[in-house]
Each structure stands twice: as structure tokens, then as C-alpha cells.
Length: 282
Image 1 (tube, rainbow, N blue to C red):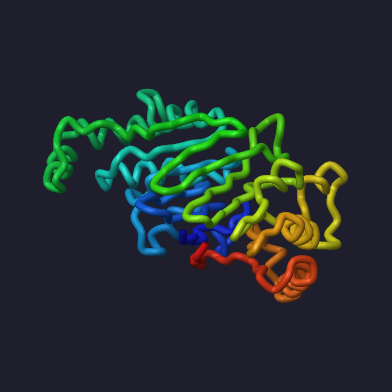
Image 2 (image 1 turned 135 degrees about the vertical axis):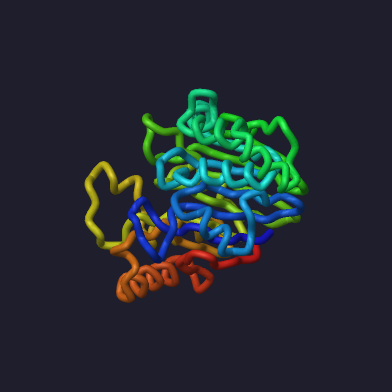
């Protein structure tokens, strides 16, 4: 398996980091976990096209995990790609209709591209045929415990605490060829995530705040620090740990040094802070 970091940031607009997006290539499948703002641009910078994506899996539907969803679907459609397989919590089906349905926000654009005669000729010149259908991602709404199999891989999921009851929030593991990748999504510590990450070869875990950084009493249990993440990962027998979802104020040299010191003290040397466009073998 090969992991490419397409977005390692947060909702904050930030030149250094796009919002959440993680590409996992396994067998013939190209699986994108989350699709926040800037992810499609980084997908192109990584040398791939939107139509290369076979599966899109959402951990939850905060904007920084799905802002580029419509752009990805539209761009893959414009390339003539196969319908994207999309998996995520409700209401992802209603959101998709809201973008691409007959009364969706992109309906004016899609009518022009498919019904305007000059646009039809452009499409035909690019090898397309008429009538040109609208984008039609294959959407499956999922719940905790959802499982999926692909080209030599198996996906599993669990619920994690983050923005309930307003949003269902999930973490995922993917196993292939005796290797295991786990992505926490935005997660507070919980027994279900501890079980999911057991024996992971690579754990990609969000980190919203640093050790010693104050947090509201309602936020503290939902936002583990590098020390807490390191301890949980070590207890679960994780082999390699990457922190992601870094915020702007956490990207100073001193903050990085403190986070890495906490990681190495609590977990070991095989821990790091993810950066956009990094590539890792799992």
C-alpha cells in the first residue's frame, strides 16, 4: 500500500497545508479518505488525475473534510471517468443531490455543458458521445461497523467522538497483504478506536492541540495531545505513527520540536508530523 498526504491541515486557510485528504493506493484501487479544500489541487500536484480515484470515503462531513467533493466529482466527470464510488455518513446522499441533482447548485452549469450545441461539439471532439449524462457518483451512506472489500483489501470502521449528535464521525482501517493502515478521522480517544488501531503498521491520527495548550472542558476530551496519542498508539501495538490536521499556530519550529519530543518520548522514534505531498509505504 502507498499513502500520499494530499491535505494535512485544518479548516483554517493556510498556504502550507490543504485541508484533510489522504490517498491510499492498493491493488488496482485508488482510495481517497476525505476531500477537504485544496485536496484536488494537491492531487494534481502529486501527478494524478481526478478520474484516477476509484473510491472516496468520508470520515465525517465537516467542511474541511469535504469542501472539494463537488470539484473532484465534476473534474472526474469532465475527464470522462467512471462514476466515483462514494461512502460516507448521512446526509452525503442529500448533499450529492444538492450539487448534481436536477435542481442542484450545479444544474445551470451541467445543462449548459450537456445541452449547449457548441459544448456538445467540444465534448464530441474530445472523444465523448451524446447524449452526455450528468455526473452520477454511486453514493452509499454508511454507519459504524461498515465494511467493504476491494482489490485485495478489506475496510472496517468504527464510530469516534467528535461532533455528535450533529455529525456522525468515523475512523477506518484498511488491511491488505498482511499490512494494516488506520486513519482516525477527527477523533477523541475511545475504546472502539483503540480496538481498530490494534497492530496497525501505520496510524494516521489527527492532532488539534499541543501538550500544555489550554482547551475548553468540553473540548479537552475530544482533542488528544501528542503525548496522549503516542501513549494510545503504543498501547495498541502500532508500528508507525503520523500526526496530521495541524493548525497554523502549531507549525512553528518550537511547536514542532515539542510535539516531536512528546511523540518520541511516549511512542518511539517511528513517529512524525505529516506534511502535504509526502508519500509513505505501508
